[in-house]
Length: 193
Image 1 (cartoon, rainbow, N blue to C red):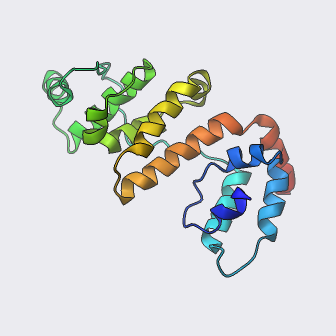
Image 2: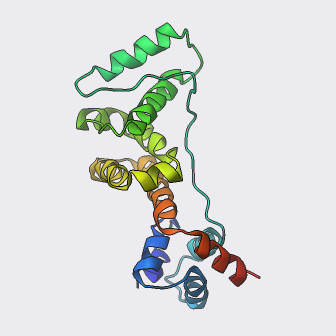
Image 3: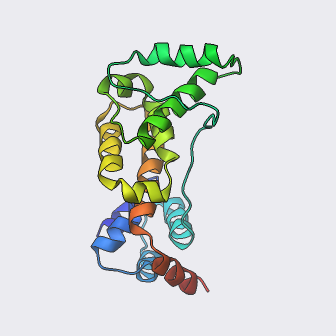
């Protein structure tokens, strides 16, 4: 069972609610199942963290968005130039401001359900992952296929260790939005008492 496989790894950010749904289990049943799993190959840290996550799921918004930026990216546009133009137009000089501008432009682009080009994925994968992490549950639910498609592009991209960690958190956010329900929440609360 996939829930058991999560415990063999060092991250609790696998799509656990999807696995629970696929197994036709309730969150309460999954918690009970996981609590019973033992063995020296099981990561105790992952098990503890996963149980906490199942009882109280939290989305992870990564990176700061600059709310005064309304710009978005259009395919074929020179993204680096756009970031510099926004920086100059708004007279922004803070540390790491170009990363924040890029993240915000990418977030605004995602909100328009505009696919991001492979070229931008290659250059700005971290900021794309951070932008994806800031999408709201209602947006993810309404635009499921688009969001999954953009996350899949990130999955298919060459990533460093930090970007892989960010991707797992993005997948976790999507998992919570799509597969964690109010009913699951009340079941989890009852099982933790």
